[in-house]
Amino acid sequence: MVVVSDTSPVSGLYRIDHLFLLERLFGKVVLPDAVFQEILQLRSFGYDLKAILSAEWIEVKSATSVAEVTSLLQHLDLGEAEAIVLAKELHADLLIMDESKGRSVAKQEGIAIIGLAGILVQAKQSGLIDSVKVLLDRLIHEVNFRVSQQLYDLVLSQVDEAA
Image (tube, rainbow, N blue to C red):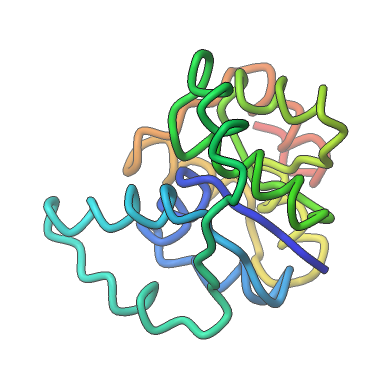
């Protein structure tokens, strides 16, 4: 299974000490070079990135179609643009992305998408975590992860953890 990720899901899971969920659910995750560079910025906030830098299951690659990435930059940031192009180039089975503009573009390109909330649902269904609500609340309060009340309620109802 080929899985490409944007920045916020990796950063969010790392910051709540649940980065391991990506490896357990997907085996290997490919990070576009631009996404990796964005993640490295966490160092300036005092984060020790050894867990990410030493993770053998994380692979960093650059998209080869610079023209396509440049075209997407009209609507998206560099990490999102490169993630979408790389997902297309690798014929990825899944793109992990939360930003709505990027998700919209990826859907138009026929790329299957999951967001961080969906990862938490899968993790609970796989028996990797006990509570989606606890982790989702941590993401919201500790990481400033933005999620609408509608999505929050929907996700919790999917895992029988209604608020």
